[in-house]
Each structure stands twice: as structure tokens, then as C-alpha cells.
Image 1 (cartoon, rainbow, N blue to C red):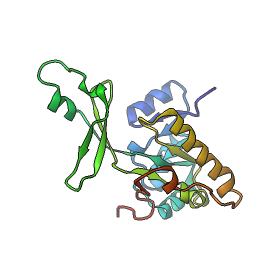
Image 2 (cartoon, rainbow, N blue to C red; image 1 turned 60 degrees about the horizontal axis):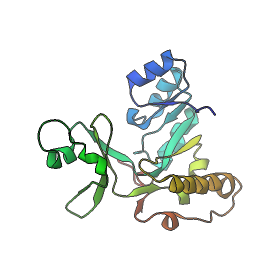
Image 3 (tube, rainbow, N blue to C red; image 1 turned 90 degrees about the vertical axis):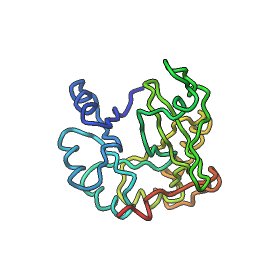
Image 4 (cartoon, helix red, strand yellow; image 1 turned 180 degrees about the vertical axis):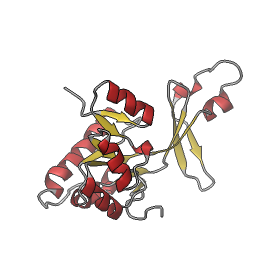
Length: 205
């Protein structure tokens, strides 16, 4: 079993992977937002480029004409990465880290009542995830028609059984529901609670 490539989320990681002779996939933090960015990374050897999750489907369709692109279609997207650990700041006390984050289940709740899950890594960085899960299962035919080469499921913190089921549903949609014009049996409402289609329809500009 061999991985399709190494995700490079910054210039340093890209150069290291390049020096090691690994297949490189440009990750979303590099914010590829237009044709010029796509061509920049493709010319430097990236076999696949993950587009910015802030692009609309129409914008993706135009960019995909110029290279192999990947889009994130499912999961809780990371909104922020911080060196400041809120959990440690509130519950950790003073001195060395007490690893309270290992208890898991922490969230930040905004004034509207939306809960944003928190995840911490081994370097004590805090990752703030979206309150709603991205789900584009209902729109797979349009994503395929847009010329997208690969779709990605972000599965941070998800149970293995759920990841397996979500992957199966998207695989079915890609193989049958979209490529052959069949009907997709499962929908976003059927597999997740509160969900969002992100910026695929509304964009940011």
C-alpha cells in the first residue's frame, strides 16, 4: 500500500518533500485561489493541488481547466490554528502543561449559541473547527462536471466506522450517482445533523 502523496501545507514542507523525492499534493492552507497559483505549484512539481475552500463551484470550474485539482467536500474544516491553548489557559493553571486537553470534548460557543469544536496537537497548538460539518454529497455530479480530479474527506476526530461509511457513500456517488447519471440514494440530511455547503455556492468575494 502506497500513499498517493504527501500534503504540503507550507513552502518548507513542499521543499522537504521535493528533496525526498516524494509525490506532492499542495494542501489548502497554501490558499490556491486562481489559475496563476495553480500553475505556479504545478510547474514546481505538484501532482495535485487542493483548491481554497473559499472558491465557488463556478470558479473551480474555470481553474480546473489548467491542471489537476482537489476539493474538500466533507468534514469539519479548520477555521483557525493558534499557539494559545484556551483550554490550558482556563483550566491548566500555571507552570508546566497539565494536558487537560486530553480529556477531549472542548468547544468554544459564540454569542449565537454555535459550538466550535477544539482540537489540540502534540505541540500544544489549538485548532478551532467549524460548528457545522461541510457536506457536498448532494452536489457530487456538479463537482465532477467542474473537472475536479480528486475529492477529499476531512476526518479529524471522527470515529473509524463513520469515516468508513462516509467514504463509502461518496465512492458510490462518484462511481454511480454522478459518472453514470444515476440517482444518489443518500443525502446530507441523512448522514449528518447541522451541515453547510461552505462557499461552494456563495463564495467570499
